[in-house]
Length: 542
Image (tube, rainbow, N blue to C red; front, side):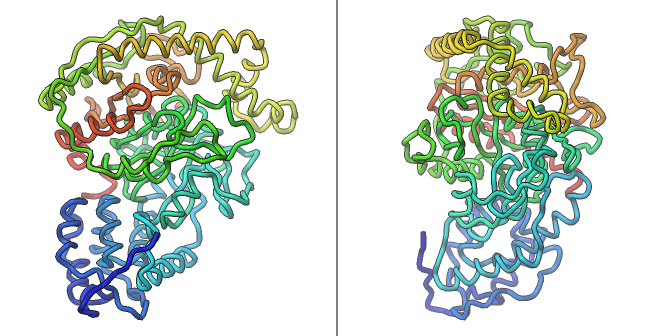
């Protein structure tokens, strides 16, 4: 996509004009959100110097800090109007990564800085010619290490793929690049995305943005931490069992699992059974998240279950009147789910905010036994992982490189019969119908995003919650599986901080296909609470 940049004054807005220097050095960028940047830039010329020169000299550190402080949509507006160059943007983010990433290990396989700066300069020359790729033009982006990136190592967090360099991009990556992003590297993930704790033999552990002695969550843990600490403007991720939602909650950002099919998967060798997982988006604001979702979403013939719906709706205003909106609270499923002390009480404090928006919050009941839901989940997850990785398991040399939790999943799948899989699919269908029945009474339902606060980095997974033993490595994340099994859109919004100063999140879940409606309520909640702005991570030094 291209757009012409015109001006009657060739000096105004050029690479080193006085007006532009002031914009970069007076600290004003850090104070602006997307709407105010748009207003500011509306009064400025968007013409850049026609000679295509980039801003060759590095800006002061304070100005670079202002650049990374911008929300993604605001940074996009500044780049498009050439008030900030792509090269300056890349310099600022590389500086931020060099300063912060050693403390948390969120970004891995970082590409050579000289190469990345040359890519940024190319983007500046494109703008000077009036060529504009899209809203991510010239912005750095790190892709979750479960998505294939052509020419950049993709390990899936596994030693089996530690030297794997794909020849082609996943569909998601193709679209991000098509909108102008520069891929700077990957974000860390657990082995094959298993477990909501981001560690693997290739790169080690990713640490929480707020407390480096605690876990980041997962499997999009690297993405969440990089985003919270402003090492990337926006982040992609994927979600099978809360992998966009749990790390968002643990790092005080927004993570959205869309309706299955909104974001096309693959290209994959199996196209029809993999409906437990989906790609999605994360942001420090809901507007940023929605913009990335619009980039990722839309039909692709290589993914036959992808939805033929125009994703442009996600780029529109998210403002909406919520008077009379019915919201149901599922809580801990009547005591079934163990919860760490303080989580349910924190969730209930959000009700007043929602009611101030015009919502009516009531207790909700799901007409489906949670024990049956868990057994259904185990069967379908075992089947999926045994199908995808069973051949590697059969090779003793490869099996020796697999973590115990993966071996347990595969062996569980190998014990199943076809009739077990079919019964689980029937149970999942019954759960979907129970969700539909519940949504006849409510427009949205709420659940905690996690059952425990971020735990010690020394634990692979918590063994007990509220005096109850966890019998599997992922039982502590059982609260997220209802949305995963039904394919429903679910966003984790920041809920605040517990007694130990650790973040937590709240799931807002909508009926299948109501992705925009979920984002609209998340946006209204964000405007009323502003947790990201109110409580930045201490590592940022703000």
